[in-house]
Structure formats: C-alpha cells, structure tokens
Length: 258
Image (cartoon, rainbow, N blue to C red; front, side):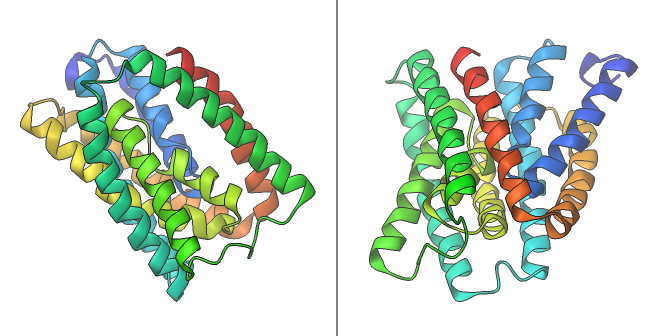
C-alpha cells in the first residue's frame, strides 16, 4: 500500500487529483482540493500533506506553463513581463511567509485570508457581470509592474505561511485588476513552479515528502492539467470567470475555518 492507504482511498485520491488538475489550468483553483483530500482521508502529518502536494504542483506548473506558452498566452511581451515579476516577488514572499510562520498566529491569518478570498470572489463576479475583465491592465507601466509585484508577494507570503497560494490566489487577483482570464491562468502556472519548488525543497529537507504518493497524486493531476488547458481554450472566458467566482466563494469559508 502507498502511504498506508487502502485501494479505495487511493482511488478516491486519484479521482480528486484528476479533477484538481483540470481546475488548475481551466480556472486556477484546483490544487487546494488535493490538500483537502489528503487531510480528509489520510492520517498523514500536516507537513507531509503540504510537502507532498507541493511536489506535485511543481510538475503541474511546468506542464501548465508549457501548455499556455504553446497556445500563445505567454508569448507576448506583457505576458512574459508579468510572469517574471509575479514569480520573483512570489518567491521573495514565500521566504518572508516561512519566517512569519513563527511570528504570526496561523489561525488568525487563515481567517483573514478566507475573508479575503471570499471578497475577491465577489469582486471577480462583479467585474464579470458589470464590466470587462479583458484588456484593461497595462503591465508594461511602472504602476502596472508594481501592482503585479504586490500580487506576487501576497501570494508568496500566503503560500509560505499557510501552504495556500499559487493559482488559487494569483488568478482571481489578476482577473480582478483586469488581466485577461487565460493570461492570468498562464502566468500563475509559471509562478507556481517557483513557489511550489521552494516549498518542496524545504519539506524535503525535513523528510516530509511521500514520494510514492507524489506519483499517485501527480500522474492524474498532470493529466487533468492538460485536459483543463483544453477546456480553457474551448470554453467562453466569461463562463470560466463565473466558475472561478463560485469556487472562491466556496473556498473562502473553508480556508477561514480549516
């Protein structure tokens, strides 16, 4: 048995991982459902859950980023600029988040983050219904770069402090400020490589990664990532944005109360 899990439990984890992969490249939030599943159906220590999930997110980030590069979202100058800024500030934020972990009460931050995620969901829904979500944000200006940097840092701090970050936060925040939906998902994949990679190295140093479980989770998750990218390319972006808003409104209370 892998990580002491029964066949039925492993089958459940595989199914959740596949759907999570679809979510990662279709709308952004997705990987968090892997964490929820591992916490719910296993007796693994929290560090092993986060370390194992983070290792799979490196793979999903690589495949997701390559998929969006092929479809052109990351080919523009603005797209590449946003990806670099989001990734570098996200990495710096993750370093700060790890340090803050020892100083800030995690439960208080979790509540604040959950409320923030819910409010972001409301904002994304509002922008989708009453205003355009495409083509409004100019990342080539100094102000635009600073805005992307602030988002990257916040996502990184959240990841380092709580193990919640990457596309689940980056995509809605980017969409909320006016970055096109597919471009937001694409550059969030690039950032997740760096944030998840740093987190994984930390957990490897603590021997808190279950490599057999990484394979069990990672393979269907990567398959889902490819499928999710195809969904994103074929489904209307406004519909995807509504799905994103609904997921955020569901995830907010979970993050706050977990």
